[in-house]
Every structure is written in C-alpha cells, then in structure tokens.
Figure 1 (tube, rainbow, N blue to C red):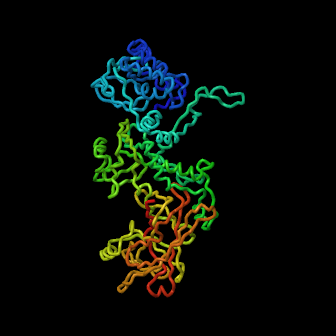
Figure 2: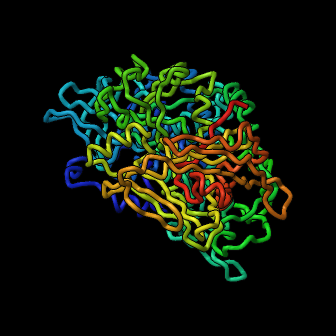
Length: 625
C-alpha cells in the first residue's frame, strides 16, 4: 500500500501535477462529475475515505479529495453499467461500514500514480494504489485485458480512462486470510484468527501532525498516523536470536517470507478449521510443558549445578504450561505451510525452473524435494508422498495459489523428527575440563579407504575421541540433547517416546593425516602397526537428565552397562521407549542431557577393554506415541 504523509497538502506537493497537465483545465473530479456515465463511481468515491491501514482512515480525506487535488494519478473509472444495482448498493454500504475494503478492492484497484497514457505502444506492468500489479497494454488499449471505452482524457492532475467493467480485484495470500468474512466463508476462521493475532499496530509520532498541547502540556495530534505490521511476515523464520534476549523463554516463528508480496509466486496450504482442530488434537500430546525448567545455560556457564529457576516469560508476565502449549503448537502448525515456487528444485535439483501451471499439474511430483519458506526440506519416502500436501481445492490469488485442505498432511518424521546430536559439533554440557578431541576422517590412502569401508563410515566424516582423566580412570562426558544434524536441524526433544542410542566408533580409525587412530591409556595416539588386529572393547553406560517438573533439579535415569566389541561403527541403544514427560519444543536455554562413561576395571583392561572411547553421534529415535 502506498505510504501516505500525514496530510493531503504534503502528499499533493510531493506528487504534484506535471507540465503536461497545463493544457488541461479540469481536474479528474471535474471530469467525473460532468460525465453522467460515471455517477455511480462518483458517489462511491465521495463516501470512501482513504485509509493508511485497515483500521485508520485519514481524517476528512476521501477519494473525491484525492481526485480533486494536485496528486498526479491515472484513473480507470468503471462506468455505471459496470455495476448491477445490488453491487452498487453494496459498495455504498461498504463505504460506510468497511471503508478499507472499498479502498483495496475498488478505488485503490482503479488508480495508479503518475500519468499513464495509452499511446506509443508497449505493455507496462503498473503498481496500483492498493499494491496490485496490473497490465496496461497500450497496443491493444486494454487494462488487465479489459478494453478501454474512453481513453486518454487529460486532466490537470492526471489522466482518465473509462471502462465498461470493474477491474477485477484479486486477493494476495495475506489479504485472502486477513479478510474475516472471506476466511469465514471458506472455513478458514481459525487461520484468520491466528494471523490477525500476530498484528502489531503502533503510533508514529514523527509522521503525525501535532496540535495544541492539552492543559497539562502533553502533546495532542490533529492527524494521527498508525502503522500495522504482522509478525508472520518477519524475514527471519525463527526469532529472537540468542543475543541480548535473556528475557525470552520461547521462540517466535514466521513464514520467513512476505506472503503479501505481489511479485512472488507462492503455494500455500490453507487448512480448514476442521483440519486445524484435527491436527491440534493429534499433536498436543507432544507439547506437554512443565511449569518450571532448569536454566541449562546458567548451569553450563557456572560449571556447577545451579538451583532450578523459572524463566522470565516472553511477555514478562505469566506464561504457564497451558499457554506455552497453545502458543507453540499453533505456531508450528502454521509456519511450515508456505512454499515459494522459485526455490523448488526440479528433478535435477535446479531451482527457479518451474512454471506454476506445470508444478501444480503434477503436484510437484518430479521435484527433488519441497522446500518451504520456513526452511524445512520435505522428501517423499516409502511411507509418505510429498505431493499429497497439494491435495485440496485450489484458489488463485494475485501472488500464487492457495490450497484449501481438510487435512494437515505433514508426516510423523516432520512434526516429531529424530533428534540427531553430532557430538563433534555439539558443545559439551556441565564441564570445565577438556575431556576429548574431535577428529575429521581423511581418505587419500587406498588401504585406509578399504579399511574404513569395511568398518563403517561415520556421519559427516567426523567423530569424537574421549580420553580418560588418568591412566586407570574412567572418563565422563555430558552432551546436551539438541538436534544438530538433518534437514530439519532445529529439532528439540518433545514430550513422548524415544529410543536413545550412541553410535560407537572403533578405536582404530582414520584421521586427517591418513594414519589409523590407535588409542590406549592416557591420550594414546599411535599409528596402527603390523599385528595390531585385536580391536579395543568398551563397557559404556549412559545417565539421562530430564525435567520432571519438581522445581529443584533434573531427574536422572541410568542405563544398563552395555558392551561394545569395538569391531565396527555400531549403535548401542541405551534406552528404549523412554517417555519424556515434558516437552522442550521451541524452548531456549533448556534441554535434556546425557552423560556417557566407561566402566572398566584393571582386570578388564588387561583383557582388551579400554577406558577411552570414540563416538560418532547420539540418536534419539522418535517413536509413534
């Protein structure tokens, strides 16, 4: 929408008429008033106020005033026959009750800045006052394929063209949902209500005109300017960041893109109220929040177990477990729904090659994957076909396609993904001592390649070596359980069941210098030599720490002592079907953790067991609840 200065005089001065208007003697309003075929449009314009945003009209300023001022515009005015009697009466009523709708769908859709003349040929894409992009074909004398009736009537403040048809208005995705009556008629009230709840309207003192101070000396304003922004259009898909945000307990999420942008090509899923409720009921067990969590960042910084404390809520008031569920679940239902056509890869992985009609005709079946504007990657597998997301009733909007759907069709692996902790990239938790070293794997030596291929590859060619504190001591190392791997990398533990395993790596393994890592005793680091064929074995135990809502410290549970042969890369499942009672989804500074330790005696060390060990990653395998 055109940003309007705080009074019509300032606006008119900025967009004053050009020299070409000197031959004309009448304003656009004069021309309209003298044309009996424009009497209906004239009456609507007299009643329709100009709005800065959807709730704030400019005081005492109508479209009559605009068309009678010095603002240089072009008007494509619909003649009387363009309106049925019912439509005409409806516009008059809306001018009194929903003026912003009249501005957006009729008046602002018929006016563009500057003088636009249908001569000289060419085709122009014009931005109208309501922000829409319409096609002015000066060869065919059409506006958005509608023939001009009268054309190029010069006025002192612009140019008048008349049409036998009202220029069709088309919502963009944002407008389609923001219009409450439209959304209700399509069964999308729940989506509408959520979108509206993310609006922030603020007063702009610098853009407003100050009047006489009140009796207490406080300023008053004869013309107040307000601006409305919507958090869902935030350019960051997840915010705030970790900088200077100690007061925030949870995140906010947006689409990560501007769904009211007229230059974009979006595909957006629009779940009906029934679909929303069904998904809400299905997922709410994963968003079971505690009333208090341990601030793990504080614990980690101090290096000692701190007392538990309650976070300061995002609104600095009460944000309890129920409100956290409501906020985060609804947020996670909405944020993945939008897809930008221009970043969808074709079968060869190339982006920006799709036409909307081709993509929708096959429902993106040949796209390598779907990438939504939030940043999630969605791939088909044996149990789920990504193209099913695009099932539903298609609605054409000015910036793409909306798909009204009766089912939120994201799969289990998306809404409750595995939590993969790449320990080489994960900060240690609750330790002030260095207890290990990350190693990268190299492959230039052919013998080493064959050995690694037979032993098993490690994820991202990276693993972590944990050495003991003394020659006979057993090391302990603790990791925070926050996802660091995968295409949905921001994965946190949710309330529900997981299998928890650690991927062990043989103590014989590659390092970047192409020698085989052979560890024994304290910080052992000798290359493998002939005769070193017996792998070092390990006894591993895990201690899991998690919130139990007690308010003093995290609860812990200890796994069985598990034996690892040391022969190949392998997963030890320390816990199966472990039920996390409370969710960490979208929470900052708090997470479960797991401590790993060896349990080897001196006798066992003489029999091939080592008190150091190597790990690749930690896996929390999501289970259907």
